[in-house]
Length: 174
Length: 300
Image (tube, rainbow over all chains, first blue to last red; front, side, top):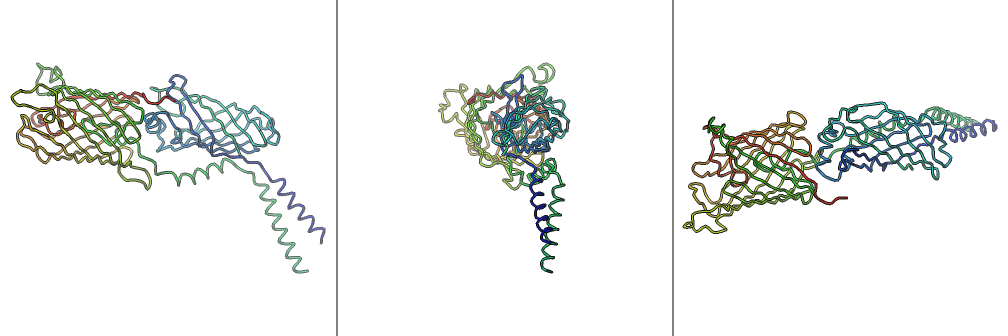
């Protein structure tokens, strides 16, 4: 009887040990974007919510109203005319690291990654693949990537301002 | 022994639940959906933007403010009345104009100066927002105060002995607006105007009260139809209440405003109290305002 008891307690501990899947998150991720043609068109959002897990999943969520511009008029046009933030309050990304095997979350170092997933912006969802970098330092990951967003792909009618923007994501996870 | 068996049973159950828990993968996608859904409940109480497309509707100020560090160069243009007939190309041969510069000083404060060709008037105003309509449970209305002054610099008969103060006009307005929904906004503007001396004007009074009614209805993302009307308690002889119907076309940095109006003047006292055209007689003018915003403040 005592054997069974010890055995079960052992399983219990083993169980919790094996179960610990690592999830890292932040609420202060940073997304910036800039127009390649107009210097004034640039904006930063410092309140991006993001999570990454060692199963390869990675998510981002940013409020459109959280994108700050230098001038109030631009921010208004961005929200009211182009992104219609009352109808579509946030931008979302749900993706998976394609080359997860090359990333060791338990070991410090820099890893090149390719992330494939769905970007939802202005009510339009599009599957994209983005090349980025994950740096593990002191056990905490830092994710960086750059990519181009075409306004047309997301039905954003901003052709009078810019056709594309260069987006940059930077998240330090805890 | 019975107690021991019970304890054993409890442990078995516990380990079983843990084992099943392990089988369940963490799903960040579902986590994101539930966090967003929870966040959506706390969204709201944001200041309402774009109650009107511009700081003016036709002639009158709206509750809109210019952002800090921005300068708005405005050209207001009114042709002559349509009833002048074909010889004067239905009024297009003559025009009245106001050219102005507005400056956004802070989120809630702006000032501006302008000059009108009619009676060679110089004007200036200061505009302050005291309440900003907000989504959710915040303020239900936007309220802005306006103080304006105009100086008539045209030469007048020397025998009238007109002093500087006689040439000056004051207007105070409370602008109260609500954006009812994404497309429709309404504004009510109780107005007080002071004439220091009535020159060439009969009837009316030196202290005048009026109420402005402004409405805008968006018909697409960039185009709205506007209505502006002022009702005065006392009018000078030969003047009418100003009524204007217009269209706003917003293209980003510019706002084009096209309208039909019976008013010639474009500063407060002049369009509210000195409108001599009558819609009934076809004394309607075609006009347009062009607004171009320049960013001149603090480069980061």
